[in-house]
Image (cartoon, rainbow over all chains, first blue to last red; front, side, top):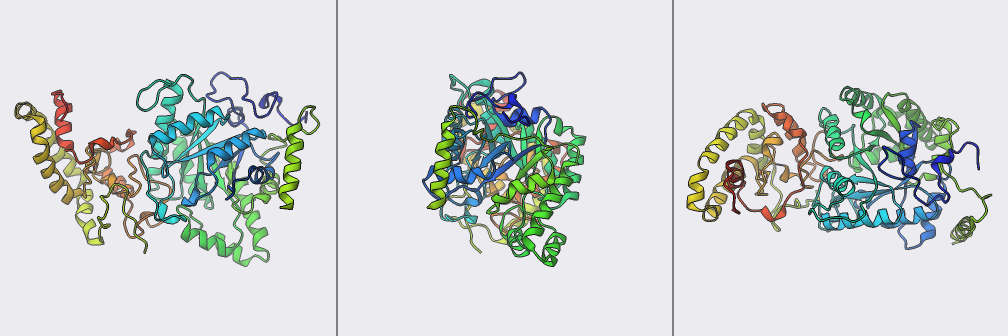
Length: 354
Length: 172
Ligand code: SF4
């Protein structure tokens, strides 16, 4: 096995749950890496609009060796794509550690709780509880928004399932889902003073890790984190800061006015505009932000959201140096009996032709 | 501007025009006084509970709910969810949030503090935070609220509180 790999992060087969460790609620790699104090890297997968498993494998392959877990978005921006639960199940088959995103917009408490049990049975160790974007911003504005739970009560619901082995109704669950629970926070949206308190609320409801909205304004994040440290919240949850490359000044402007909750300072847009190669500059800004964010006390990792630029994630993570030579899971082609890889390689080749 | 009715709004009821927010925002600006008034009102309700029990909770439900709808409708744009949390939300009714969030704002709040869904409406939770800072027990905004019980929609939360706090049980 590769010497840079921590063998304890990987079971006999990478898709099998790891042995349970004391103090851990899940048997997944993300929780292990974070609890060991490593700077974690997660990334977001662009979900396909297709019914082909290979499309998922192909999109995940670019992250291999560079991320600790992959988020499968759940109709982000209220747009319809392959479901998060299906993507997560597919990712576990090829050994990746997925994060199941659950949005309260599309399903009520009955559907959500059923999905959590199902996902856990399929080997999904991490869940991220989200409210979800309003339907008006997506491709089905005529849809009925559900919002039966909100992200905080969703956290409390899943924690009850996991720790008390009970549904919200009080009915018993025979085998509870051993998941690592996450939530989102946006330090870059008002009411700024309330944001740390809201984080505290989510932690009290059960959040163990946090993935933030895109960070393009480091001073604003620093202020937020100072308050978080005052409240000692970073001791109770792992905070992963959302980062991502901007393809151009035009995209940045578009995102700022059309994507809910994204805050991009003028200085960043100006810097992109002045650059000869805007795309390269966007990546450089992202690398710089990763490096600045790493220095902030209480930040446990980064969550890279490189929508339609997923192929640059490896390069940016490498350049930022945050992994310090650590290698998150990648397929070990030299291991005997690893024929799934063979199949995947073939599948990828086929998907590449098509 | 695309307008989408809030999830809790009865079908066909249009989103409120701007001037309708006026009284709601007055209530939030006076959250401190209203909270004191509400506390006194709650004590009166609890004191009246034995009388209500004699009259029969069920019989009172409709008239009391009608009064509550009128009064709180005017002051807070109340949607009669039946489990009022105004005292934990700075007197800003969370059911006016198009996502019905009862635990705080979503991540989509605009830079100017307005709603992601209705760009012309200030976020209910930005207002809730302002209101809560004016209340003696404003830190209750940090309480984790349980999921809503949709069966209680349309019921009087005043009667529910009176029943619960006085210990005079029985379904309303
Ligand atoms: S009863 Fe429900 S809908 Fe009415 S003001 Fe209170 S929280 Fe809002």
